[in-house]
Length: 94
Image (cartoon, rainbow, N blue to C red; front, side, top):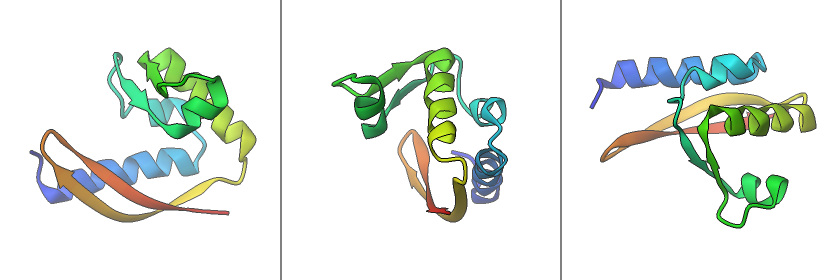
């Protein structure tokens, strides 16, 4: 597991890409074979399992999300470490 400072730097870079609405910058934080699961996928793409596979699907999802909410902005809150990775808690602001 990476050091807390490294994790926070990665999280802040990811949030910065979101706040710049830089889809390619956001995607640079994901593996090419990413498996992404979210409730927004169920609603937006009518996929009952909520799963997207690969950067192409994720690119379309994130681009659509930014299109739907052009004022989307995130503020870093916390990092939660877990076996195999970590999660970033951020607050969306408008």
